[in-house]
Image 1 (cartoon, rainbow, N blue to C red):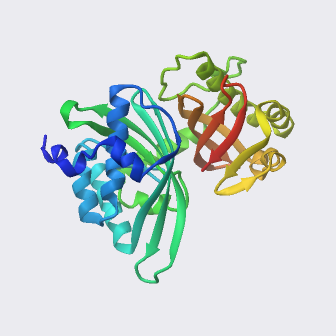
Image 2: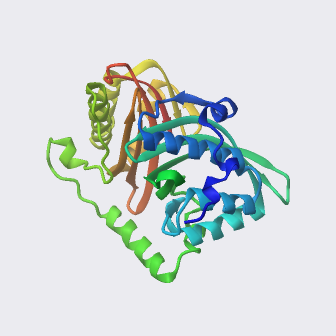
Amino acid sequence: MTCIDMEERYNVPTEELLKKFPVKYETPAETDLARKVQNRLLNGFNVWNMGFDAWKHWGEVLYTPESLYNVHGAHLTLAEYQQAMNVSLSAMDMQLGAFTNMVFNDDWTAIRYTTTNTDRRTGKASTFVVTEFVRFADHGVHGAKVVEGWGGVKDAAYPMMMHFQTPEEQEAQNRAMDELLHTVLLETEDLNEKYPVLYPTSVSTEAGKNMKDRVLRLIDAWNRGAEAYRAYTNKILAKNGSFNVHEKDLTLEEMQNRPALEKERKIRIDSILVNADWAAVHFWSVFGEDDVRDTMEFLHFSEDGKTIDQVLII
């Protein structure tokens, strides 16, 4: 274990960092691990914007040699992730922007933030929303470190990320996607059995249980078709709510009539993280005959956890 993570520059107090990087929709960090994760993430933003060498050095604080990261859907070891980041940061300058969400639940955290990428050759800049789901372990005085993370969803960058894998890892990746493609949902009215959460986390409050229940019912209504989805969302989504899908603002009617309803079947839930009045959900779907993709959602609920007035989907 190195002592780099004990250096003062990587341990700026949370209160100070929150002034510099405020979280727009903040949820409480109520456990010792959550507070360590919150501090580590904020310190990461504080040192990120300094190029690959600084990022790699920071990685000795955030990761262990055994850490894994799924980048745009591709399962990478830490060394492979570093190779991918070296290529990316050589081609573009990546500046992290503002946090929208930071949702803590047990040893998991989901974050949503902006990043501005500038092509080093052309100078063209583009701003994106990035979402991540990350599992942490407590390393005592050395703070929280990543066990495994999911950075961004499976998209057009997926084939490029697979180039950093070994042939054996590529075969395993293809098998995993094929298993998802051929997932068969149980024929049951018990939605907890029909949609088991791959990485379950605790839900202790009545409102939190309501939130998880609504998440499962939303997914099931989607899978039952446009009429069922429209009927359920009329009950659960606020008519004047805020709905943002793939960085585009939608009305309730547009939410209910998305083209994906005709071709997407939601098949596996990886995570449902619940904290205060926010839920963060990571799940996988099959589009059409053979296209497997994942989605990351952040949902804002009413105080009792029964209705939703804000949806953020990547």
